[in-house]
Length: 94
Image: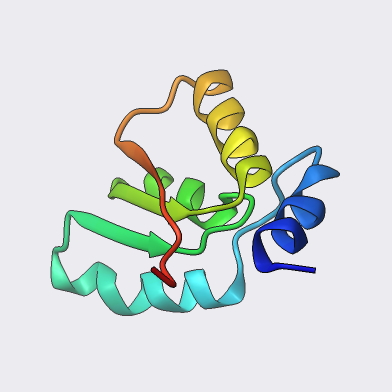
């Protein structure tokens, strides 16, 4: 199974975005003191951490290649009328 198929299959069944990862919370605790405004998230999967950082007032650029993950994040952005999240469809291996 190739990587794109693997991740599309993983995110195909996602129905609701769960809480942010512990890693995202740890990163936020570190960077909030730095006065950064923009965050680049690579390989964001279902977008839960992108949504978390956006809720903390970051402009977020999310880059991934999973079409199912992208669909899920786009739905969350539209449903919640979110601003400042940009989605880039890219394969970082190339």
